[in-house]
Image 1 (cartoon, rainbow, N blue to C red):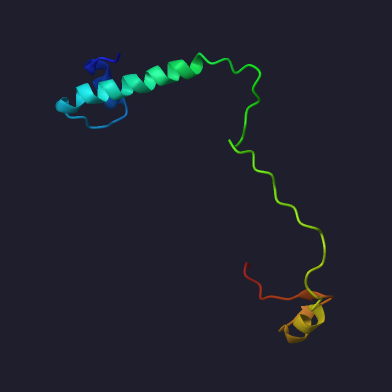
Image 2: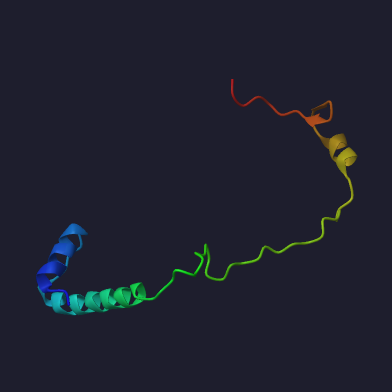
Length: 94
């Protein structure tokens, strides 16, 4: 179990203001967390592959099919300026 002096040191290093009355409660809470970490470290995970995400999401896939009609000519007709099939825009950087 963590002692109050250790909690004070941790609080100072973390630059967290802790009132003296809070020290016993905080020491008990931190001790429980450390006990949990020790229990988790005791588990043999040598055969477990690391995960990037606990649920390992599978990317949704959809068929690679055209869903819209080609409107390039209509958009080109209303464009302010075009050259060789490309939209021309005003120069931004000189």
